[in-house]
Length: 82
Image 1 (tube, rainbow, N blue to C red):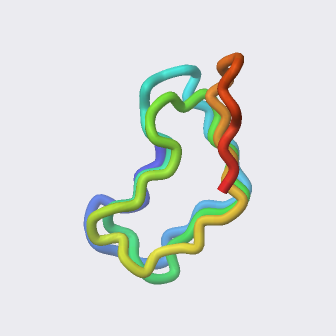
Image 2: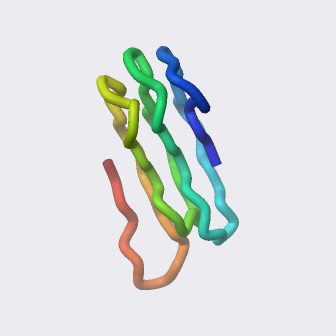
């Protein structure tokens, strides 16, 4: 749903939003390139059936990632809170 950058960058932020995947097998927040001063906080990830928060590659020194809640919307699956 949200990819921070397609090449090396910095100072990407995501705050105070809810992402709704409508039950699709997609990822919520993906960061493979955003570095220093890049973060996410106060984010709800709802009905995203892929990975909710994926940080890898060149995303070193990014963060913090705080107050992020994921709920698949499926009965019997406990919500995840970071």
